[in-house]
Image 1 (cartoon, rainbow, N blue to C red):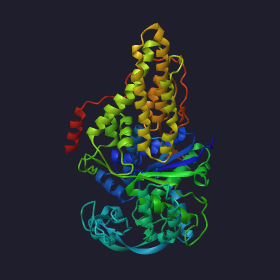
Image 2 (image 1 turned 45 degrees about the vertical axis):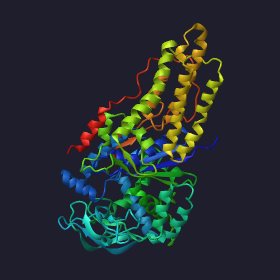
Image 3 (image 1 turned 135 degrees about the vertical axis):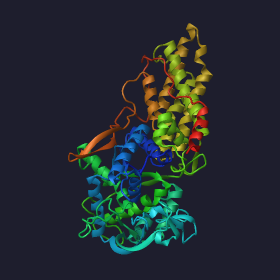
Image 4 (image 1 turned 90 degrees about the vertical axis):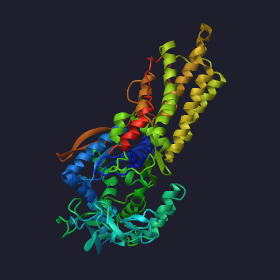
Length: 598
């Protein structure tokens, strides 16, 4: 048997400027949890980390609108987002935040290591400032025409059409997305990351990923490496991580750029998790071990930060760019094994927009529908490799036809018949070919479904798992145990129902990464007690006894395993209740009306 692997699941950090909608969790949330739950069930050592991204100008803008301090706004939405992620059942080992002293310390150490190795250099730049407020505008909040491909809608940091890195002053006819005004450009002194010094190392590393990464991610990343330019690593702003250099440390108008400190959160969250676990060095098993693997989950708008910039920071801190150097006190750190990027999810054919009410926030969705219903939809119809469209008609169909009438029906009628006729899981008698064949197919499904999940091909994985559900339903219909009423037929009826319940248990395990809440219910319907697949909890923690804050964490060493396990005859059964709620078609009209209301 292979030794357990150390797997880091690094999940994109949701911005704490407001509640998150289902388009957000389609990219970073559900896919990362499906992957992590499978890896834990397969016996691997998983560390899943993230938190709320709390720095930068967007936080200041949102705080002004709500009459709060930046910290007050971050506190509010950290709580909202944490509760949403718990509701979805996302099994973070630690979901923290970037405003902790631990994060500040780690971010500053990475900066200093890059500076010592010569990859952070001073330079003047033309910075964008709001004429009405005098406040620095974030690159991503400036839009205009790309000077390279003439795309109308390029951002101040890059053009999503041609993929080239940009500066705000490069844009033709730039405007602020915050208030539509034309920014004023002023000369500023900042520190820059010397990205061109990593062209060779990044290119070689990316080329080595040819057969493993999603082709769109790899192609996009390789195109970026061809035209790297120095990138500002500090910003004129008074909210964020202080710049740890003499003459800058105590300045109120200079901070580390939010894009820089946010990606370091994967490392700082790992360090914080280790400290909270009681073993401060535990994080090193995922960051120093050359055999450890790391998978970064996000939407496609974040690819550049994870396939180019974050690897450049790791290379530079380890002294592996063209300038050389030596690793800092945190040691040589592992590069990503894979950047697992999802495309965009639209809603009823429109881009998600909170201001235009084209949105449904996670909290509102979970208040009206099952978490597993959303998880299932995003797994089967989400934007894994191409943009997809969420529609209420399709949500209704998948819930009613596939979850309720498919998987839910299999569970309900199998357990109901066994409970009614035997009161327990009946003993298995002599098997016929039809029994052996369906059991063998069910048991054999774990290998291909597991391989697909291991490669983050979740659509294909759940499709394969649902074929087992369909085969189990067909078996039950073909063998028709409800027709076996005589005493001479009782042994055969018992064998059929035992087989059906074994199939239910197998499907429960195959679907657990996708549907953890209902899988726990099925576990209990089959007469089991205790936790099958653990969920996260929200805890209040502090640093050195000060500044209490919420984190998402949990103990996920539960009974769930990635294998077919024999069920035990004579286990008592009760009459089940449906595991999914059948939705009335009227919900489509109701939800569309909500979208149309102001």
